Length: 465
Image (cartoon, rainbow, N blue to C red):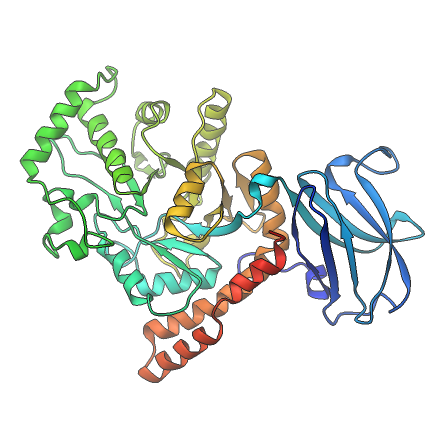
């Protein structure tokens, strides 16, 4: 669990936590075994305070309201209220109608109608296993990241698509809440001695891009489509020289600037176009990763950004030194100021999923999606319903559009700590199923069946959709 549970949430449960603007909501507050504060049957003053409105004593015309509520037999409360703007609200019990004399304060969040029905799913869109240069196999990586609190993961090994299929197939008969997305990190062969040194993540494409042409990607399993495709359907493998001729032809038609190598540009554009054909999300990862020097020239980063080659920009991920994520964040906001808008994600680029690895969970993405499912997640990111989360230090930060950053801050404090407790139990059982004896595997399977849909019920409790 990355985010600690606030003391107030150990003492009191408030639900739903996320409400829809203009819709009356019935809110319940229940004690959870802490020190008794409220006396059953007694009336108490409840102060509802919008975070944005300034102090009540100075700005009395703000979004404030007092209610008189009676404590129930459990020592809690039930009341109905309609919230009028997208922001966080304090639910504050105070003495003598004075909000400064606080007895207890809890929080809820009101969202606009476009977010109604969009749940926050947190995931990682770039990670590695022993299928390439990672330290755990795809089954264990999936289990460990569920224990970290993720709702979805991708296996994106270098040049290899099949490790993601192995993880999906391994857990397909278990009722788990983790969605495992197929994927790969794409590295195509050189053309005329020019090596395409940029990296590309194929998130969710239903077939391999690496294996569209002859090369390392088909050396281990050949051209068998079951290793190259999620559903057994994909284009035939193209002879290498035929592919190179296609890239030369594309480069000749692109009219690239003089400071951009046309072959590099053509390969880059071809990869992203092919990912889209495969139904995937093409992610431009870690442009400011220092591999001796920046692994691609900044002029190339600007070129593919301004020409919108990719579907999403990995604004956070990979390393804990400032130059990578810091410079990527600056670029994102400067591009926004120029009118260049693109979806963003945060990923670990993890090569070890263990808690002992400092970089095991340094970044993630919250996607606001109707479903935790491949197509829905991709569509939501493309429609700009995502925010990147930096957890390099315990003081998290978020990158993205302001409304989602604000909402994400609330969720990371008020919702995800409770969510992550449930994920940890499921992830531990997944790891037991992946690595245990036959008896331990059977026990894990039975417990996972018993826990089925617990996260779904948890979401339905806390979101008034």
